[in-house]
Image 1 (cartoon, rainbow, N blue to C red):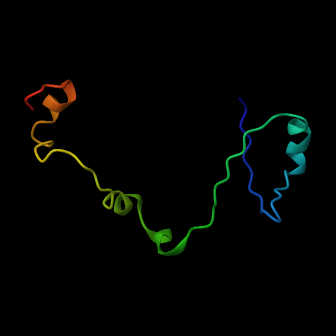
Image 2 (image 1 turned 45 degrees about the vertical axis):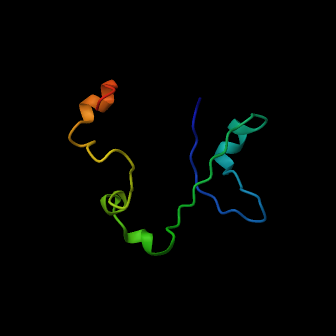
Length: 77
């Protein structure tokens, strides 16, 4: 699979493929993944670490102490 990446502005549900890629892609079945490149709201200046600090996990209260037992599946952990 060959990947081609470019930026385009969506208008009326249409994306224009740049001229240099049209000949290569013409008639081919393609997979399209759309990613909004403009930052949204106040999260734009937020670092990855500050975003990771907001991640909440669930698990047993003693997971940090007995994590090896949980990984190998000991029943009494």
